[in-house]
Length: 84
Image 1 (cartoon, one colour):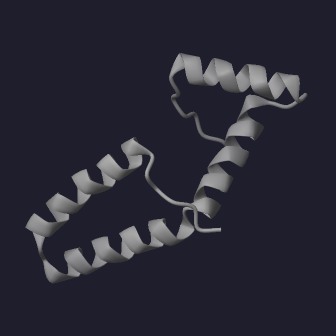
Image 2 (cartoon, rainbow, N blue to C red; image 1 turned 90 degrees about the horizontal axis):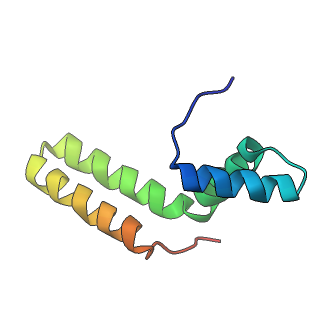
Image 3 (cartoon, rainbow, N blue to C red; image 1 turned 30 degrees about the vertical axis):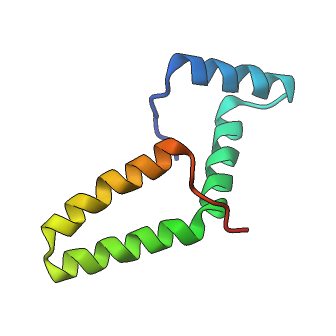
């Protein structure tokens, strides 16, 4: 199964050119990159999901609303660590 995903043109072109240099398809390269990201951030992703679930169960919309911008800021700043 495959799904269409929208990417910025520059990112797609970069992936396409880099993949071509390796004799691969851009979709294969992007799939590998996503799998690596999930592996490298597994612990933080799990922690975020657990914290979100706790807040949802507690019915605390104010804390949940505060959680989202803090996660976006961390992701945009590139400060997420690797979890080996």
